[in-house]
Image (cartoon, rainbow, N blue to C red; front, side, top):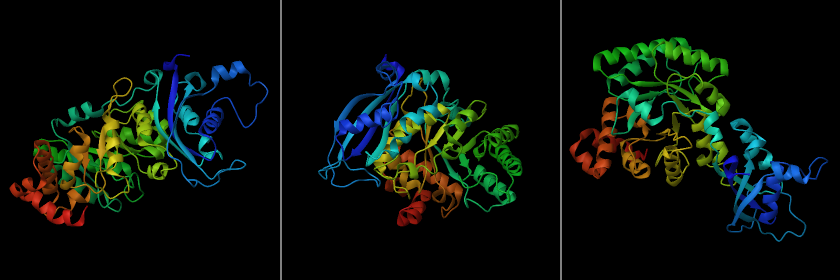
Length: 422
């Protein structure tokens, strides 16, 4: 079969068995086989539908299992073997369907007793997926066009406090931020349609506040309304936002699922801001889950225009190297050229601009700071200015200290957030 008609998945594997044996079990379990050969499992069926082991690269051995529930082979020598295993699956087993693809490449294989560790590292998908899924409608270029902001990052913040603001308090905050010149403000992932602030009322109040600020400043800010909910709620809330003149919707990707994202993208008229909360449970253990490199490809196919990637020197556990890989993955063209705007957030402030620029090697990012902008000692406008100036310095090859010597907004940010390390 032509390689273009196969899906290739790359795994990190740990096993008390030989790597070759573990790979055979994995490939069989996720295609034509089970623990024993069954009637109807002919050689012809295996040849047509079986997964193929394309490559096995041994890595270092280990002296203990990474995961519980491992069945040791008879006479086990105490060694747990690690390797990178590449397996290809025939596309006609599941077709260009993201939900059914996930059952094949990330299904029951995580439960196999022969494996003491497993991570999905990457996916290579055939062009058939691009024909089925249109990908982001806006992405980097379309988002910039909506905002009229070029040649620098899109800068903004997250509504804080995350929960508890009344509709009136939220509208007041949003208008203040819009008048301060911010490019983007997003709802927190914890706040979608709570009983104390019904979504319809929130949309009406926030869009009116943005319009008042736009009338005064000539600049119309982007606001990402959190529409996370069941499929009927996604449609209803999207239509509320668009009907009120809103210009962005946000969803928690793991809450609505990849099929939910693709469903939303089929009718969305504004950019979709994809938040990856809950991602840590799929990736934090080095012995389990998947790399963002694989997951982001599926999110981009399904239609995410903006995609959260964590932040450099931030408040979460992830290493800067991992965040860097995520940023670069989002901007690497996929299939039909899909590009998604990486969204950098988590413990960000002006002092993280230099590390972010070094990692991204581009200004095509959305850099969000919650407390790092809202809690600036001179207010949100100064917080926005400090980040804009820090980015200008980074691109120009000037240090943060050099920038601070010329601009009080940056100096004041260092005085407050530099000491806290956040």
